[in-house]
Length: 283
Image (cartoon, rainbow, N blue to C red; front, side, top):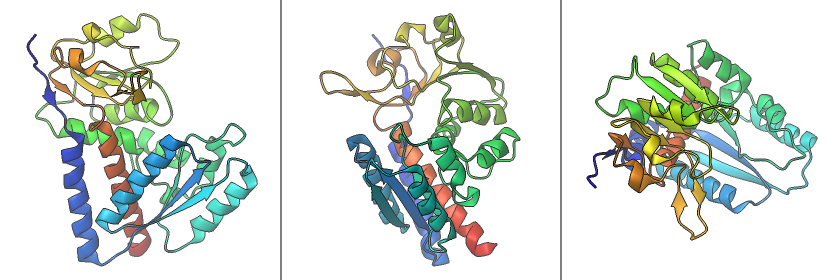
């Protein structure tokens, strides 16, 4: 069968963003600071944190990680965040998710100073996005928009279907697409007739974290497919939500997993951190 999809290479685009950030940091002679809070030592979270810290080092961002035991309580985390909110050398605070069940992620995220909320999850920043006045934007959705804008396609008027409605990806993703004048459908676990919604998508964004929920033969021929999912199959293979080899036959553009959305999430985090630093320095 003929392969038609062109690859949306997140690694290549993210590398250009990192190069631009590094040049700006060097020219302005500034040192943006990022604090990462990691609770417990989940291997996946450890890997993500190491990737983010490596990217910070590469572009000239100062980064420090606070590794806390799984038993840490809510008040101790709130006190740490309050200290970092006041620390002038820290311009961005990242609370690595998910957290243990006894901790309230929503309450902790709201404790972060919105001007240091480089993940873009604070209600203030999400509210700004909803009002079409974005400041610090959720990293994965904005990274997806950077990918979409890198290709020669008009987004306005296209039907975008987002599968997944989390606060981290699905909901802010819908808001980002609305900013570009897409017609947006958000599907979630209670959605009926998912197949019909997917078949109507000019732009399909899957963020369920479950391989196989979307079948490749549902994809509209010529659709742009953005796979945000990331999971490991029983044979050890890393995959997204959708089978790449069959989906690329129907799509016009498609992201690989890994190497698609993931690098863009990290690159956007760096962009948010330098933006927060410039606000702090420039007033």
